Image (cartoon, rainbow, N blue to C red; front, side, top):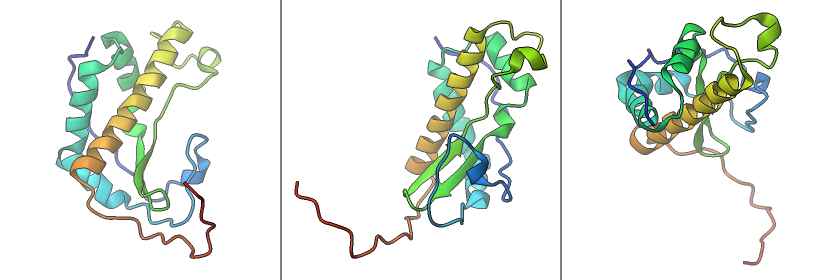
Length: 154
């Protein structure tokens, strides 16, 4: 389907954000999340490149996109280095389950729209991670597995 819209500004990554507060993220080990470096990469083009890739294939329609933009959801992404897993991790923002009671946005009128926005934001987050890992991140995990791990037959 695709979406022809202007690329929103990349998120500002907050060094003080606690990854453990996210219900959808689990990170073990090192807490140097390298957000400053990742934010630089986002501003140097990773965000735009990933957004353009994502927008070519998203099922999000323009009304849903504008709703997400109005709610500043693109700005609320968090990206971080997960040293234990040797990858860029992310937390995608979303519309809360109590959106109806809270009257979150006047254009939100169905669970279908809410689900579509939340799913599309998750897809965007993964696309950004893929672009960062493929074209920008050149470091490797510092985590060393202990020597006493059991060996499994293959």
